[in-house]
Each structure stands twice: as C-alpha cells, then as structure tokens.
Image 1 (tube, rainbow, N blue to C red):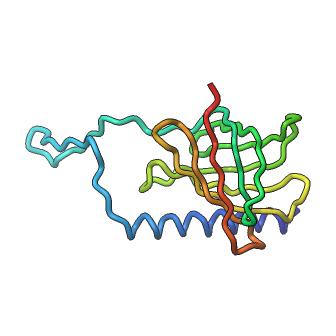
Image 2: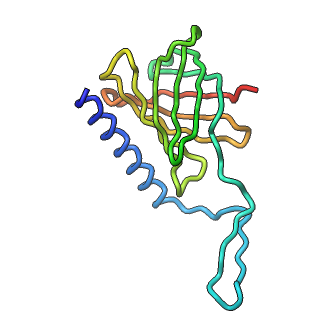
Image 3: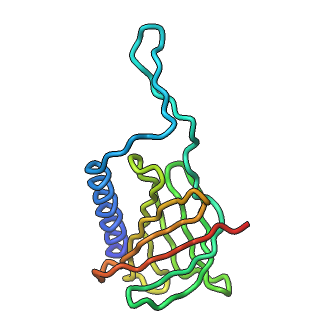
Length: 157
C-alpha cells in the first residue's frame, strides 16, 4: 500500500508541475477584468465571473489509447481545496477513484490523479477542461503507459 500511495503522490506532483510549467509559458488576457484605483492606492483588479465549479454528476464516454470505448457515471464532490472523483459502472460499482485540484493559472483546468480500487498498480493522471456548457473534456494516461486516452463527460440534469 505504501508503494501505491507513493506512486499516487508522484503522479500528482508530476502532473501539477507539468500544468504549472504549461501555464507559465502561455499568455492570456483575463476577460471581464476591470482595473480601478482605490483612493490613490495601488490599482485593484475585480472580475465579473464566478470561479468555475465542477461539482456534480456526469455521464462519461471514455476511449483508451487503442480507441476502445466504455461508459460510466462520474460523481464529483468539492472539498475545501480539492475535488473527489468517483467513476462507477452501470451497476453503480466504483471502477476508479480520484482526487483533483483546480489549476490556479488555468481557471478551467482540473488535474486529477486516479486509481483503480481493484488494481492497486493502475494509477494515472487526467487533465480535464471544464467547458462553458458544464461538460468535462479530458485526456488521461496510466503511469505504466506513454499513450493518451480521452474522456468526455456531460453533466446530468
């Protein structure tokens, strides 16, 4: 179990550092940002947009690197600074668990470390983009693989 947890921490650390590096090398101009002065003090920035929230239930279509597809439900719950992910099969049995964080400099990106409860050595990372319609679009890989899979999750009504 210690080896599995070390692998989860390593995968999470690597995925977060990769996202941070990517974010630091891209430039973007925030939309809806107003700059004003406050009684002669330094300028303050205010944004008219709320922080994105991925919390909710989803129907997901997942494709592995060989393009084999599977469907699952995904439940995302928000903690203080993290999200808990649980993918379930059609019977409601968990097939994957994950922990995710929003990437500060990429406000619509969530980095998730996930694992299979039935195969402790099956550990991976996924980076989701939270789309404007509330859906999640992601790419994932397993630690033992160097190929990408994809996933699209539509928010349940």
